Image (cartoon, rainbow, N blue to C red; front, side):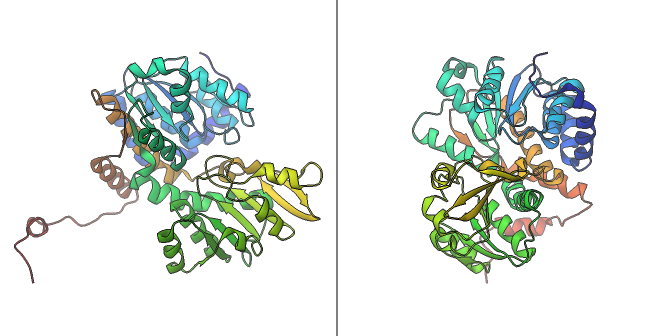
Length: 417
């Protein structure tokens, strides 16, 4: 079996971590039990470029249980858990290509290793796999059944490709599923981002001015959690609807230029480029903390910061680089990459349980379609309700069921005041 990992000797610890995560992934376990019986992915080569974590390990185990030939590489150079990668190879027989801290060259070499397997199904977290296939291996598109996309940034890229007519394969936008973004993006990102900031810096959140750039589901979750820990939260936005929502939720809203002068902690969650740059850095106070929880490391303009700083940045703490700008200290966490995965362990398993169950079911749906047109597809309402119902059951929660009379009333137009 081909693979490229840090150390196969870490496998035992990785297995313990995977099994610990599985305890909180009861929906995915139900999906895996059915997959083992029905083999919906039998014989299909599936390439997955995802964060190589304990939660992801349980997803790829489920895909393999469903009969797929699964190959995995990292979607971020700093998010890989090396012991998990080792366990996937040693304990579960899943070819894995991921090393924490790998170079950009190695990152794309690993993606190429997956593409060499001639996959017919893909899973992406950021669309790097699909975009590489389109740009460098278009000959594979003729046999491609389709793929899934896990994150906001990736869906944005893929919808842009579809709009331009450049997308040549069908994709299911798992990120846009309610069982993903309402929970994973909001509660997962909210908690895990604060976890990463605290692990990296040991900063007290209470009493700080916390600036959240972007008020999508990730930004909403982060702002809510920061407020809950006692921070004074400022939101910056470009969308007037989202900005108004933030105001109504009780947050201060202002431009990033204005927020730069008063913030203590800054976190970008926009999915866009250069949200914080030269003018913002100049306005910042001494000792600020700057980090990113968007998928790519482009939201903080580190090139601007390097040009402005005196000398090379100093590593003053694990995952904390200190830049000196006009005598002021600016602390950047995790090299501007996903702070919740690079400096912590990412989302809790219980919330990823829903996201990855939706991901697995979307792959099953995609594998059964015939001649789907190249486009970005939504997760079906049936899949959404299945995942939500299984999650409620795993939590011991029951809900009401409409009576025949109520169903008739809701479906009719004759009844009125």
